Length: 224
Ligand code: ATP
Image (cartoon, rainbow, N blue to C red; front, side, top):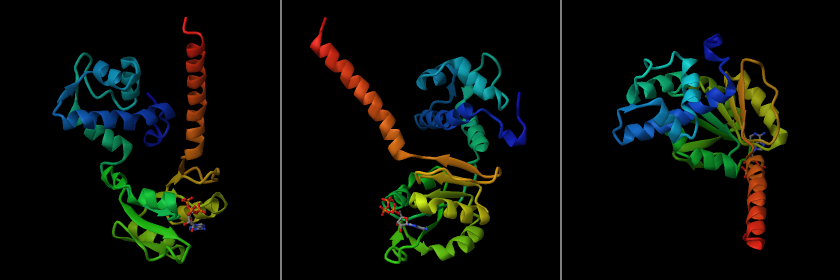
């Protein structure tokens, strides 16, 4: 089992599934389910039970063979593994339409990422409040990030400004960048970046929509 560097060398695909397991388990918890088998949990996520057990094996397995998982214990363990058993202070840079939408998205706080700062360079935006927080001038980025121990920076500035913002966030102690700017960022190996390209996502969907529409037209043209 590979578990060096605090689990940082776990496969990306496994890491990507951890929040999905947690989300599903929390739903089960909310309806009072206490135990769940690997097969039930895997089926609810449309994956194989062997895949799920393989993922969990990286973290010690969580149950004895043949026994179901205890939902409560597994939720707690996954929250610790993901790193949200305590709040992860976050900040948004770029309070345009997208930045404001994310600042208004209460679920980020609820899932463990309290917003500790919103920054912009536009004087017309600076001073406006979103959910009780002022949009601050970019000059305040470093002192606020240091004071609030911000660990995740959410970048919603234009692509041309993103690298400079990333550099400033990293210099302020931020070690995770959630990058919505349509550009790649250069960061030190001690910093993690997650790129969210909304238009790329919808274009991939468009490809599938086009294929489905074409298949539907073919069936309509030749129902036999
Ligand atoms: P969105 O793309 O989110 O809809 P928008 O169309 O209003 O926003 P963009 O040009 O994409 O505007 O910029 C997003 C926000 O980033 C704007 O509010 C802008 O003022 C801000 N911004 C631009 N450059 C910087 C920078 N260097 N630092 C901080 N904020 C910036």
